[in-house]
Image (cartoon, rainbow, N blue to C red; front, side, top):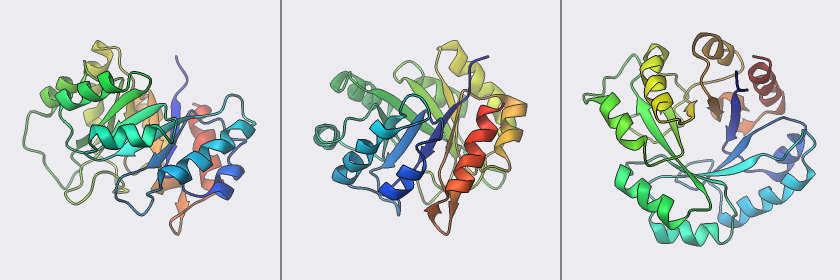
Amino acid sequence: MAETIVKICGLQDVEVLKSMVHLPLDYIGFVFAPSRRKVSAERAAQLMAEFVNWQAGAAPRAAGVFVNPDLAELGELLSIVPLDVIQLHGQESPDYCKKVKQAFPQVQVWKALTVADKDHNIAEDVYSYFESYADVVDALLLDTYDPTQSGGSGRTFAWDELPAYQEIAARYGLPLFVAGGLHPGNVGDLLDAYAPDGVDVSSGVESNGIKDIVKMTAFVERVKQS
């Protein structure tokens, strides 16, 4: 079985990043969408410069999180920050995702899609909607539905929905990431029950809104030991 991919998202601080160089991370995410974790292109480039000092094997790859960006915005940012992944968290259509892939063939395109938690019901054919993206992106990410924001809710969704999504992703040979409310105390339950291809965490490894090296270390160790 392939090792589970780990992505820590929402990095902002150089000193925090320096404390992470011993962690065997696969991806680090920078948020370019409206958020308290948003960074400028210049700051992201400064953070990426620290990747050369990574001590835990190969340096992580860089993902940029966007919400409904236009192609010009993406092009301008990529001229400053050499991202490996464009991660789309808005209402980007399958056709738009395809245009992004065509415009920027040097990067992967990941699409985040939302799944209802126990308090919400998304009234649409969610599996058909999910599948409509499967042949135009390089990976799919499931996050918890929130009516007020695109990700970062800090809540889990109904994980028992995962097998149906995993079946579709496998059909297209796509990695499927899980986000939403993960933290060191529950990621093991997710991995043991459903073994997703990857996990994406942000608020679950923070203390008082700041990335916490103890929590990040515990999270990564729990994933990589599975």
